[in-house]
Image (cartoon, rainbow, N blue to C red; front, side, top):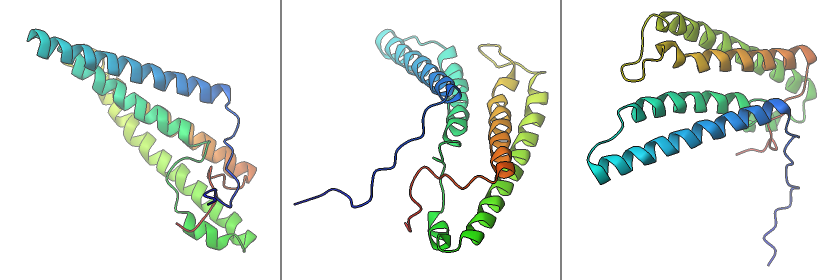
Length: 174
C-alpha cells in the first residue's frame, strides 16, 4: 500500500540572515521564558517561595515571541491564508495578479492601523513602569509596532515589485 502523496513536497525558501536573526531571537525568548517559569515552579512548590518577576518577565517575552514569530512567518508565506479563492483564480492569471495586489494593499493598511495603535501605546508607556521589574511599559506594545513596520515594508516591497503570491504551500481548496 502506497501512502505517499501525489503532489511533490513543498520546499522551504532559503533562510536569510534576517530569518536566522528572528529565529535566534525567538529561541532566546522561549529559552528564557521556559527557564524562568521552570525555576519559579520549582521554587514555589518545592520551597514555598517563588520569584515575583518570573510572571512579568514571561509575559513580556511571550509578547515579543509572538510578534517576532509573526514577522518571521510573513516572508515565508506561513500566515493563515484562504487558499480556496486563490485556487479558483489559478485559471485566471489577470485576476490572480489583481487579487495579489489587493491582498498586499490590505496587509499594508492593516499594518498602518496596527502600527498607529501600537505607537500610541508605546508613547503612553514610556511614562509608566512595570510593577515588579520596573521596565518601561512601552516594551509591551513595542514589538507590535516593529512587527507592523517590518511586515508593512515587506508587503509594500512585494506590491511595488508586483511579486506573485508566495503562500509557502500549494493553493489548494481546503
